[in-house]
Length: 155
Image (cartoon, rainbow, N blue to C red):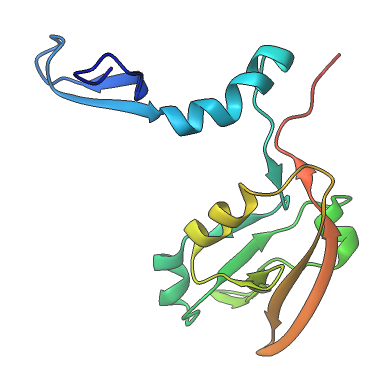
């Protein structure tokens, strides 16, 4: 609550070296809470849209020569991403790799690092069709796919 009693966020955790209720607190902003509370009440969980890949963090990808974009590490067999043709990074020999696709845009919005990808995905819905701009072997391409769900419910 702020000094006027208005809700501004919800505490989630505290880092306290002493173990007391003093230290650095972490909270979810009220705007984020407003976006997810209905879904949480309705489903008991939050489901986010995902591409369905694993990726290499930007700092590590830069060490491999990827200056901008998100390097795809793995694409699970049978996933929507695999069916759409996305390629992951693969080992070609001892200490040699063939880099996977590099995601450079989503529906025309530029992606420089994974934070950009997450920001854009947050505006999307599960099962929504999207177009990824990628670089494959330094050649630009487009790949169309439907977003998957971050959570599969085991009923």
